Image 1 (cartoon, rainbow, N blue to C red):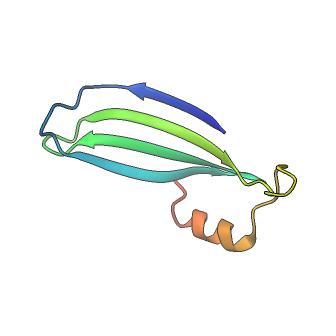
Image 2: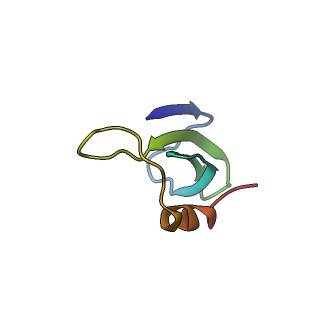
Image 3: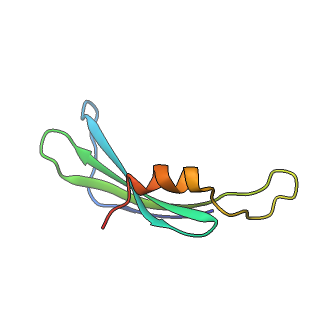
Length: 80
């Protein structure tokens, strides 16, 4: 797993945060998820992160290829 994040602007007490989750890349054994958090009142981007998650076999703890079923689900959220 790998995580990269940047803080762009503050959220204050009482702010409503809107979280957008996207799929940025689908690999053979991994998926890169993108998270954007914006303030609802003005749409300002406050936080951005990308998280790379790898599918592993729980018996061997080694990476395993994504199934077609998972790929199909992730493709619906893939960004261009």
